[in-house]
Amino acid sequence: MNKLFFGDNLDVLREHIKDESVDLIYLDPPFNSKANYGVIFSDKSGVMSEAQAEAFKDTWTWGETSAHAYQDLIGMRSELSVLMEAFRKWLGTGGTLAYLSMMAVRLVELKRVLKETGSIYLHCDPTASHYLKIIMDAIFGHRNFRNEVIWDYSFRLMDLPRFFNRKHDVILFYAASDRSFFNMPKTEWTREDLMRSRKQKIHVDDEGVEWIWMPGGRGNSKSRLRRVDEIIAGGKAVSDVWPIPIISSSSRERVGYPTQKPLALLDRIISASSKEDAVVLDPFCGCGTTIEASERLRRNWLGIDITHYAITVIQNRLERRRPDAKFSIYGRPTDLAGAIALAERDKYQFQWWAAWKLGAQTYESKKGGDKGVDGNIYFANGPYGLGRIIISVKGGHHVNPSMVRDLAGTVERENAEMGVLVTLNEPTRGMISDAANYGFVSKTPHGRLPRVQIVTAADLIDGRLPNFPPIPISQSAARPRKRDKDQLELMLPFAGSQSLRTGTGDMIDPRFLSFA
Image (cartoon, rainbow, N blue to C red):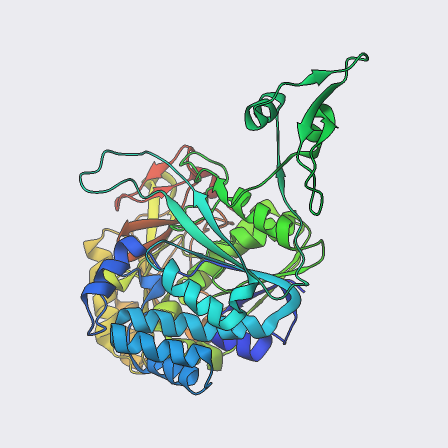
């Protein structure tokens, strides 16, 4: 049942998720208000800033895809259609309308797959929550609105010159119907908390039992005496303000993903709105916090993400922390046709997939200028220290010898030991000849290693890999590092480990330089 999908969640929802098959939905769309909203509100032309994170490239710009989504919504001839037309008149066809259109068309699909007894939690921030709440009212019905949960993650409060510290997110909680399952979560309630909240004295009877006046339950307005120990044992009902701290930089929970949410947050949502063996769906699953929480709480799960980077992080996370988890991954290329389709759909995802197939430990993004490097593999090079293999991926249908020469120049410039060129199509004879002319690695204890090699997408699919030195048997410690606003990179190691610094400044955990 547990499935991880690599692809556009709209396509996955329409093609793979059945009507009324999901008990609980949590979604945290990849929209960074600090990096993006300022651009969106100031730019009605729909042109996205170069500072957008590469993983979310072209997601919320106004263009053909968002225009199709908008027309699909208008064609429904519903309350949502009227709402979207009003948004267009007010906002124009810029990034904001693109974002709302792309979100609304997905929320319609999420309504379709949600059971009548189910619930949905939409995680957003105060900049967009008012727009999204109106859309949720139109799709799920205003009567099914349950809470605007405030996640208070206060951390490192600062003196700001013009406004108060912004230290909370908004989570919009909607039920599918009056039949939706809900189990009130409880927190610990001490004797002191109880006395402070009631502002009453505790009565002690002749047997030493403590009692306190408490209001009656639903349908019973009369107060009554209740035993203090029973109240404390029952716990305190949770309000709609959740003071849950963000993950600290030293926490073992941290995987390094830029938008990682704490497990405590997802534990509360899943425990409150689903039973064991229920199906939990996260259509923007990122680094997989919803998935790990579902595993911990014995729920079935479905996860979707559009980046191969995220799918790899989740796979590694489950293998490390939930080694008994059984799941399937869908959407990764399993044949040449799939690799070609991925390259045509998104060349950056193709680059990350190809580098992953080779065993890359770091992934680069061309958005910030990769200087000919799409990934790196580091290996123990005996007395010569830490060796480096540069990966260059070309996802176009046309190949030529200049690609080999460019890679060789990059290897020389970066002072790396080796370079591997990945091509979508078969290399020309001239490319093969040029690669051979660059000879072998001069300083290595691992025998004769060609300095520049070429592999094709078909080779990667069939498991025909380059002539490599022994490389780490596990890349499961891969974690992302954000170098700037538009680069996401998988990095070794875990925080706090003893590490080696490479010539590029990357940090490599020596625990993962052991060899088979």
